[in-house]
Length: 546
Ligand code: F6P
Figure 1 (cartoon, protein in one colour):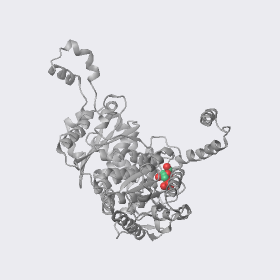
Figure 2 (cartoon, protein in one colour):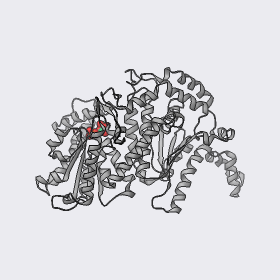
Figure 3 (cartoon, helix red, strand yellow):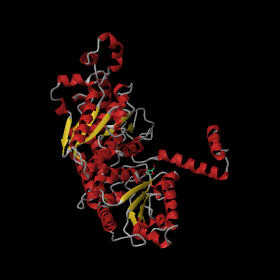
Figure 4 (spheres, helix red, strand yellow):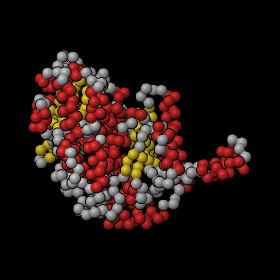
């Protein structure tokens, strides 16, 4: 079944939410807690090794009920079924969206054009497993017979961000291989990586679904040229593998057909780390850990498919985000993981959320008259406390934030962990409670400061609070829990796209820049700057004169 094409603003729930917002907009969360002793229980979900607290939001049970009605009226349940069963829900590109099939069990059946795709997924998984084991055990070697020491993933966007984020996140589980990522067409990026490599012991994984991406092919060519300065042509077969749907182009590049790992049309780039795009993950942490990551994601898939929406983590988080985005008119959301391992998590999420839901035309082809995709940003805590959190606490903008923490530290340093977690918990408490004038005065009094000396400082020290946050507290960072966390956000993005009545799985917006860059490159080569607006021409002229 095709996706519904219902504008959210035409639903009864939307009208009710508008009215409800006028009652809610000035309500204090602290008052809501004061009047409801069970609020923390009502607005939290415990599932598996996840504890999600969403009680520190400017919502009541009525808000949540209305948001759930919105999901119902926009046919979310049918959309979930359509996605998981392989319907062509990426209508603008004529494709199914089946990253969930990549982590389904071998016994599952998922049909694309009447053919069950699970056997080919498992065949690819076996290929990943056997290659990973051979590289890690040193059974396949470089052209001088030496075991591989380094792996370089060459790709960009979805062919880089997911694997790079996961490899860093799971570094505790890593083996002896050192993994590098080259993505930017900036030649300084690739050259800084090359500097660290020994051609005799480095394996290159070129990841490009299309195998036409300028950045990836430029970097792959630069690396191949460098490699061939140190190795004979036939060594390419031992040192270069590729992940792509475009095996002709891969072979034109010189890669042996046995060294090609498949990708499929029904996997979007930004949701592809579960496929062979995640080969660098498997190489870095071993196939078993890679598989655990997939199994974790599958558990979240099951939760998303089967849990009642009221207790469904991705659904609830998506609805709350819509509440702020479309009724409080917030523009952005912060995602703040309290673990350095998730240093790249927010960058990764930016592509997932912003490439998917940065759309202003609805599924009817009409311009939307409401806000869609939110700006996602953030950095790990506690670093972010010493950088941008001041603005969320005392600035003029309302910025809902997700705080993600792990109860156990991997290296087991209790002193550090207690400090980390106390900061993690303190931030959401401070965001909600703020600091009243009487709190400030009491603090000064405790410090023995006379009132007349400090009176003028009081307004600067007061802050209102009432800033919303979600806490996603997970037992421990493991491949499995990371898989669940990533899948949670994938589903959140999906739910929002469905309710906003947009197509989340195309990305035509990135094409224009690529086309214009091709024209400008031609101008640079021809030393011309005519066919542009005055500003662009002047910038180009500046570059040409250097
Ligand atoms: O940025 C646009 C985009 O198409 C992404 O969606 C994709 O992840 C990336 O480029 C890389 O594409 P490819 O894997 O085809 O090289």
